[in-house]
Image (cartoon, rainbow, N blue to C red; front, side):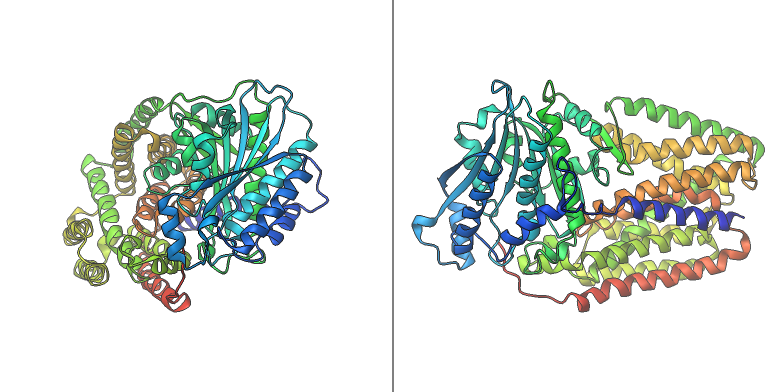
Length: 626
């Protein structure tokens, strides 16, 4: 019964996640005039992205002239702003090998204004860059952003006049140190009139568009963003973790410049199909039109909401939030996290008290469950790092951009390999790791550790995790003895992790706190209705929780891995442990132990093969990029 419940729950969770992560169907050219149509936007994309158009090239001039005509046809008041390139940008042009005369070393921003009925009100800006790197047509980066803005302007005009003015900023030289944005925000007369910005970007050629960056103190911006979730084709994809992670990275886009000036707004991008990033493969035919529909629909709805808002968002405080399956955005004040944590601790404590008196749970066995969770994490760090390195070096150690772009092309294979390694670990736990030979388990971890050293050099975090994992593997007496012990142990550990996150970085604590609270409440219900965890009265809430919880975590895992998984594959280990927390009480019957352990070993070997094969499928290529 438990095994069947486990299989069905995970199957439904995967289905829910896959459906959520799909890009929306592109709208046809005859879609209603007040909606965004990817098919209409593709007309501009095909015209603009015929060839690479870096600054100083003939195609750059061609695209510039084309865009001026298109902006005028939309009824915009059009002007151009020129400024000299920075020394850093000039050096990049020189390194590109392009023969650009000195007089052409300027950035030309294209500005379009759609006046509102109240010019005294702060204006709204739509921003994207129209230049590309030298070797890519840039159908995604950032022709999609430019074309989406043109289609958005058309749809906004179809919706009727607004009080606020709309300013279209098509920047130049983004690929050269963000120079176009710096020139506009450094002194254009419209600069001080703009109260909010919607920026469009891309780092790939497909996938759902994520809202990954906001202005500082984003609570009011997120409140407004939450109102458009139900109107966006395919829903929205965004959470406070993505915003925090991106803010800690050295990357920058055009949005970086107004954000540093304290202006509110959002930054949108899709990052799927990473092999197309800054590559010759980034053509209109290769572009995912569903991604165009998704980013365009979000840009339209957010820009329209800002244009028609009585009061624009201002900087207040950063909020904790996340979308739930794209259809709703839940958020709260960071301080509320402590109340949620107290509720989770109370529910877990009551569940343990009930299970001790009715299911033979002991505090010692809960402690053993904590140790099992620590073994999962420490072993996972070693295995995922080994699997990751089979595909190539960490990007931080890449000798040049050629290697970096090759690794991006291998990223989908890496993700599958690392995910399989985490699945293998979960099967080892569900199969009862204590029933395997501890020497073989410890030996396998040691071999994986040696692989990481051989392929990536000494990493003290991995070596420390390896020592812990080997030590715990050699102590079978510390293995859990009851289902409740394993379940409450994981919940207890994740409660501690949630508390640490709430203390150190409350903006990210939801990732641990929300699932832990949900599982604690499920454990409380199960402890009182069926402490033996055998009847439908307890299995049904556990199964429902697994479908929703694991499905939601899967929707987070994919974009998180695309963003930072190349250098931090262990991020999937923590997410895997959170998923395991939902299904741990569905430990199968004794007769399924050996098959589960055998399946885990097979999947682990497959993980290594998948990651290693990426070297053959995506061999090293010379990709010149800025």
